[in-house]
Image (cartoon, rainbow, N blue to C red; front, top):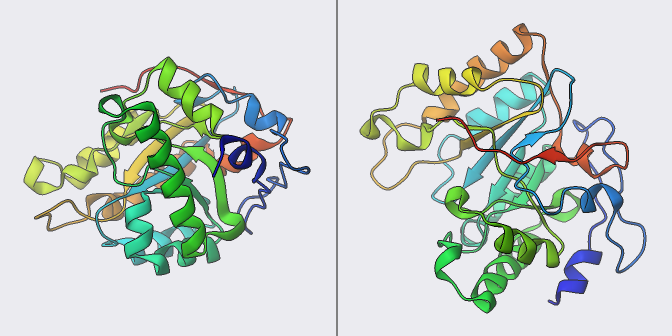
Amino acid sequence: MTAGLLAGAWEVAAGPLAGTARAACTRPGATPDGLRALFGSENRVIRTSERVAAVTFNAAWNDAGLDSILDDLARRRTPATFFLTGAFADRHPEVVRRVAAAGHGLGNHSYSHPSFKDLTTAGRRREVQAADQALRAAGAGQSLTPFFRFPYSETGAALIDEVNGLGFADIEYTADTNGWKGTEGGMTVDLAVGRALDALRPGAITQMHVGTSEGGAEVIDAQALPRILDAITARGYRVIDLRTLLTPVAGPADRGNPPG
C-alpha cells in the first residue's frame, strides 16, 4: 500500500463512547485538518487547558487481562485507544473485533515491535504497512485510527516525518504506568496507580498494557485500571476519546518528555 493510499484511507467513525468524534476524511487522497495538526510532533500530551485526559493500551504479547479491562471501561463508559502490533492482530483477531465492537479506537504499534532506529527506511515502512493491513484483515473496520505509536517510544524528528508521510500521526504518552514490568520487575498496583496520577494534568495521555510479558504472572494494569479511572474522575477530570483530535476544533498536542 502506498503512502498516498494510507493517507487517504481514513474515514474515522467513532464508537458509541466517543461523543463528538466524527468522520475525519471525506475524499480520497485528503489529509484531514485535525490529523494534519498532529503531524511533526510526538504528541505526548493533548494541548488543552480543560481537565481532560486519555487512556491508552498497548498489546504485543497476549490478551491476558483484556476481559477485565473491557469490563471496567464499559462499566464507567470510558473510551480508550488500543495500540496493537500487527503480529498480535494476526494471532488474536478476536481481540481486534472485540475492541472495535466495544466502541474503542484501534491504533498501529508496528508489526513486530522492533527498534525503528535499527531499521532501514524501507523496513520501517514495511512495519507500519504490515500492521495496518493486519488490523484491517482482523476486522478493525471503522474503529481503526490514523494513529501510530513507536515501539519503546523511540521517536525522532526524521522517524516522525516518515510515519506522517504514510498518513499516521505519532501518539506517544505523558506517563507509562510501567505495569508491563509485572511483579517480577518490582511493580505493584499501587506503584502503577501512582505513576498515572502523579502525571495527571490537562491533556495527559496514560499508557498501559494488555497482557503479560514472557513469564509474567499478573496483569498489573488490569488491576490498576479501575482505581486510575475512579481517581481521574474524583479529581474533576473526564476521559476523552483520542479520535476527537481528528476534528477541526481539536487542538494539536504538545511535544514533551514523559515523566519518570
